[in-house]
Image (cartoon, rainbow, N blue to C red; front, side, top):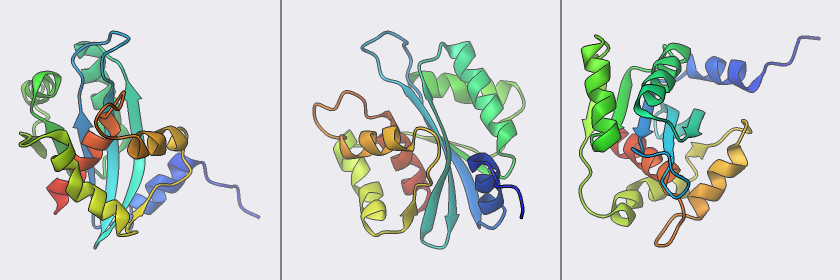
Length: 170
């Protein structure tokens, strides 16, 4: 009998069979208790099917954000595109990556419209049944953030990072 794969090993095995792997980032600028989180998500796509392969979620200063993103890129060499919201901390991250010579594949996303309307397309992708969220660490927290999105939601970071990936792949 073989050894069971960890969720990360399984995610990399799945990623090797996909058409495309990308990383999406909704970066928050401040780290205070009432401020938003940064959500970095690794998504894979095969046809219309999408799979959440990995996620980082936290409150980081700009140097910490840069380091978290660098580590995620290194952990996911399969990722060809990096969809980063081009606002405040995201814009700083884009500039940092380009200055460090790692600008290849970075796609700055300038959001238009309000958050609810931007998330509509990604919501339709989820509702189609074409999205797989594996039982990875903190998957329950991720799903709670998806279900709780909307006016008055405490944090919308996961939803916005998902929207960046889904809309960019459309």
